[in-house]
Amino acid sequence: MCGRYVTPDEASMERRWHIGARNVGKWIRTGFNVAPTRQVPLVLLNDDGQQEVVSGRWGLIPHWWKQRKPPGLSFNARSEEAATKPMWRDALRRQRCLMPAAGWYEWNEREQVRNRAGKIVNQPYYHHAANDEVLAIAGLWSTWIGPEGQEVLSCALITKEAAGPVAAVHHRMPVILAPEQYDLWLSTSTSVDQVHGAIKLSREDFEAYPVRPEVGDVKNDYPELVRRIVVEPIDMEIRKWKS
Image (cartoon, rainbow, N blue to C red; front, side, top):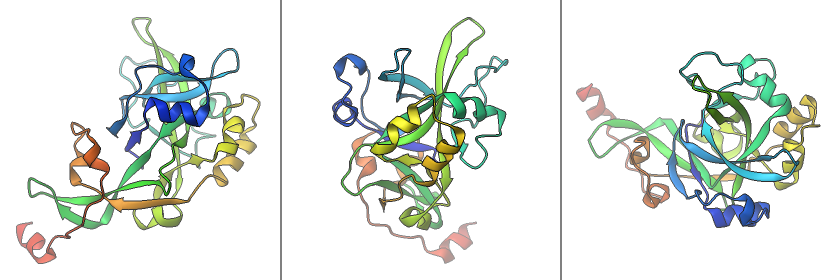
């Protein structure tokens, strides 16, 4: 599961997608600890078929949702079941987007450390491209009309079984598309079979290193969170005694 990631700045996104300032919101800033329900940048096709950057809620609300409260745990869509589950299937067929990212976090359950408060926690790792290029996470989007008539744009990222260096940290990873896959992914004429083909061929060339446990607190959002640290694993005998 991918529950936290880092969003790139506006200039980086303009360079990656060449869409110009007129289609990039000035609201975009780097988020170093983006969590579900936050507003995040999305790249999708507008009504004219042009790529546009917009702001959407991370946590998909399908168009048919009837309850006042948005669904929980709708920020990650498993690629293996997205085509059949009602939560995802409409968006997978017709409403796909890209979620720009600088990198993402995963927690290693096999490696435990103490945080600043002395609590035992799983060690977080930051995953990124070796050249620190902007990444494009494969996503789904939907528009929902809320109980007061408000229009809410929302999204979810797609995950797959982890491969490469990521698998040493966690068993799942976001689907990261290569630049040559962007148009295929965004096109409304792309078939479900082609979508699954793109997922199968998605990128796995990433690096990871340990970062501060403070990333586990959603209130923390600053550049130091992505800096590499030296891990000092806890003494397991002390852990057993304290538990």
